[in-house]
Image 1 (cartoon, rainbow, N blue to C red):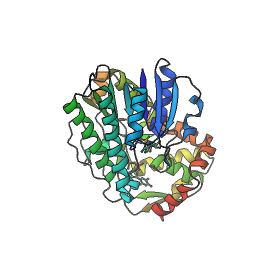
Image 2: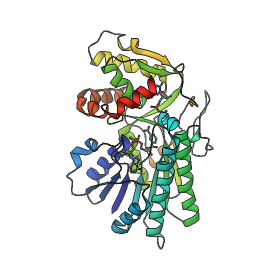
Image 3: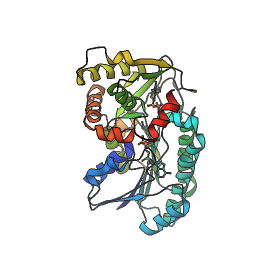
Image 4: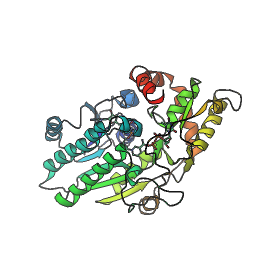
Length: 347
Ligand code: NAD
Ligand code: TYD
């Protein structure tokens, strides 16, 4: 089976590519990635020589290129992760998100449809989405698969739009698809623009920890490897035209999470208790900041038997260890353009 994974050099994509290449030696995994600031082939160094793996540098918004690629390889299944993924960047440059997340998804959908329109038997377009499409929760309640879409950021609006197109291709052309909407991921290889790796990097360098607003925003955190396992399960056992919510059963207020992170970092770095917490700095809030995300993952739990395998404390511990042991990776991704991004975003 030929599987195209898009965005495989990014955070989640690289874990999914590795899992599939190592576990399914009878599949051939093609990873297409543009290698934007968020894509990094260092993430896949350990598997780059495997015979069932091919990397292709390319842009999913390039229609001619994508059509030719499908014509040449006839990918039977697609796992689509490539995206612009950071909310703060979407506030500064929304059009880039429409281009990659909406147009890019459309280009892939068209190529997939045109390749298999005579028979979609045993084919699959698996679209990876986010819980942010549901908008924000108040203090209570959970997002279920039937919660109405109500996106608030240009990022979540672009992801919502792409989800709708996937569904529309399913209804209109009979294209087989599944969609998963996942909560906030954390773990090794995450680009240090997102909360947890950004704050780990800042603590290492004794830099301020910029907490947006009052810090009382809530997210539901899931360890990356548990997300990759869920994707494997949905890919193989998910029901055609179904959506599954994936979450960590693990809600944290940002400020509580940051304090836990500070404690763990002080221990690892042999700094006196309370050192890292002193770096906490409340800064101007993010515009349109969603108050709370929390996933009801009972459908994937009951129907496919999935549940997270690590506690948050364990996952965070592994994550910190990885960043401390991979200083070169961290230094490489935070040199150059990152410094400019950081200045613009936080000063
Ligand atoms: P990421 O930003 O780390 O990686 C995105 C990857 O896509 C990068 O490797 C980048 O080079 C590639 N890419 C960007 N534009 C491209 C283009 N035009 N053509 C080809 N490749 C391109 O993102 P991530 O955190 O790994 O997220 C992956 C997917 O999962 C996204 O669709 C995101 O919306 C979704 N998701 C992420 C989270 C999370 O917490 N990170 C949660 C739920 C869903
Ligand atoms: P983030 O990792 O950007 O994920 P998302 O916005 O997709 O949930 O942010 C997680 C939470 O942390 C969110 O409520 C915003 C907050 N946050 C800060 O307080 N400071 C920061 O510097 C960043 C990047 C995020």
